[in-house]
Image (cartoon, rainbow, N blue to C red):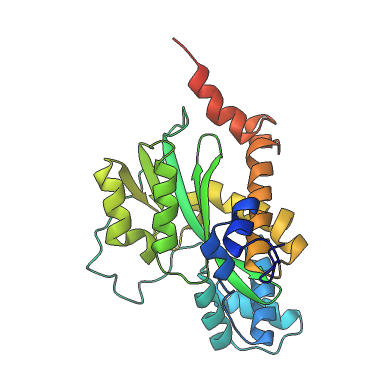
Length: 273
């Protein structure tokens, strides 16, 4: 692990040796009270199992588990975590008229090759003392995770950086996201439009419109995050690097006939007419 007082190696050099972005070393997890962090951890696990729970059902579930908590607190915590139930909600607030609206383009679409459709999403990552947010960009056909980034805030910069890194590898025909402010931001949509990529967005509150990346989050959390309870951001970064390497190149996927995402994603480039 990186040491701030190493006798021979600077922090920059240590980061280089472990493949860690130096800025990540200085990130601190987002903060909340110890009780709220414990509640957020439970909410995250319950939501991963039952993403159709809104704050009312989540409150009832937490009360079943013995937590004396009211709806207002659960709603606030779920809002901070970026969580909502998967079913469409009544329109209780007006949409931001500054954002251009994009249709959902994937209904009935047949996937035939890699780089036909990419999607992105953000998830809450509980840590031993705090939390982070994780964005990933995935190819729908192969389930290959092209890029991912961590942030301790929900600003859109880390999403834009992930997109720019992914576009250095290839370019999709369609890019699908939810209607979160990170993805409707001008800088993000402009990056896609400049590259002549069609933009698709989920219906409001419909997480299953982006089903493959929702399954990715379930795998990441049950196979890595919940098992390790990372204590520092550098440890989380290294752990996720190892996990996504396994996920892409070693872990067989039942939906891919027990092949790996990398096998599917890169085999297409060797096909000739």
